[in-house]
Length: 369
Image (cartoon, rainbow, N blue to C red):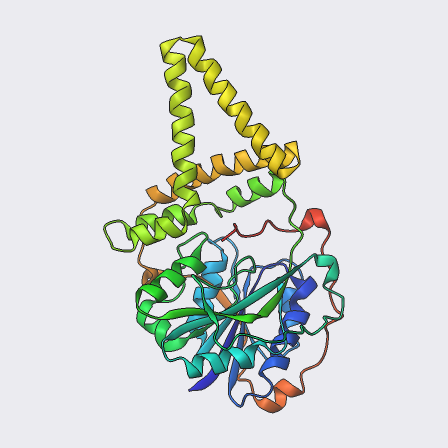
């Protein structure tokens, strides 16, 4: 069996594709048996063209069908052959030194189902800068247990294949929150999700806190995942752990229902005192959030986020769950490649190719996990 498979997911990330791929090829060069697969979600830029210059396999999902990070990871897993499988997003760059530590951790801990690491969040303007190797002294002897992989940095984590075969891989029908959902299944099966006190990726993102970002997330269905997960777990022992870990989804729904119900009751009762109380409560809530965020716009965005999060939770809850194994997608095999150690070490360096996108051209990030 191949020792390690790496799955990269991209969409219009030519500005970082070469750097991501080269960071992976450098990290896997000491290994004797590896496989790298890039799954692209119908990019319209030069992402695929740049990736073809490297000794990796490339799958391109066709446009005109649902596309999401979960689908990219699911498709990548279906093509992976490694004993261990590393998943990385297209807006990240693998940090040197993390992979050997992670592999050693899985080998030394048979009950560990997955390993992740910290995230170095940077603006996209820093993507062309030569990364400085992290310096960590007095690392703890044992990694800490976490709920899922790579908080704030996408789905960056290394998984044990045998565990994924037992609990299932990423659910391709989830529009978001597929990483914590998989993390829950891994932990409920009795395995541990570990985090090293060493960064796994440099994550480049400039998405502003603005109404446009929020509406983009809604348009791309990134607010449905918590509700979808709850619907999948209805009637199972995983429902309560899921709601407890993703509490902000149901909490936003309850708060929104309470606020709306109070407003309607005030209007029906035609009692101005209750309407005044409701208005005062809304004003104080906005004032408190604005003070905390140090910005009226940020305060309004925060309240709008909760309202749309509540809507997304309800919409996701109403969606009929489908079995992940029934999922089908249309894709093109652009390039198939079985990595050899000689080819990996001889891969060209194109890391200066690609410029960071302008701030207003960045896609909205996945919802906070």
